[in-house]
Image 1 (cartoon, rainbow, N blue to C red):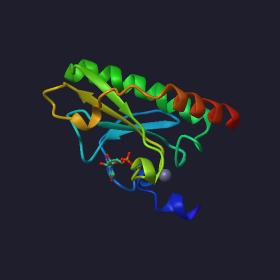
Image 2 (image 1 turned 90 degrees about the vertical axis):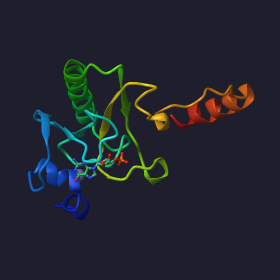
Image 3 (image 1 turned 90 degrees about the horizontal axis):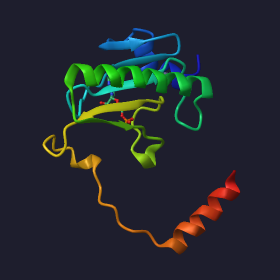
Image 4 (image 1 turned 30 degrees about the vertical axis):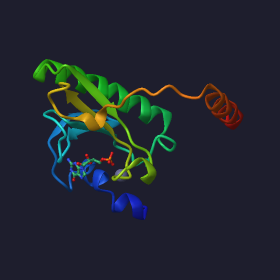
Length: 142
Ligand code: 5GP
Ligand code: ZN
């Protein structure tokens, strides 16, 4: 087993070496309660196979995780009747990813009274020239 997988906390949860409140699982994906919930019903959905981030996860596992997320989101709506659910997914240290095993956060929201202003931002109009420059650079990368 590769070093990163052996030390990966989420791989250890998949293998039941570390306990977790397992909410949903299928052959490829697992959903469990986040240990530091931002709100009631904060759930993480992961692939059972180790993959660090969005760039590395296989298309099949990616689809499975998002299909599982849909099931969990439906159950969250039924159980807690929140105003909405924020889906959050971080890639890399620069994006503040802490656990290096792909995961989707499902965070039930009741804005504004839940106080999660960290999940909100003001729209500031962009510079069209800068957006066009970004667009041309990104198109070239495909
Ligand atoms: P990230 O910043 O990488 O997107 O978030 C990692 C998430 O994993 C955090 O919300 C954190 O609370 C959660 N987490 C970290 N370690 C554990 C653990 O051992 N068990 C559970 N259930 N959640 C964890
Ligand atoms: Zn892992």
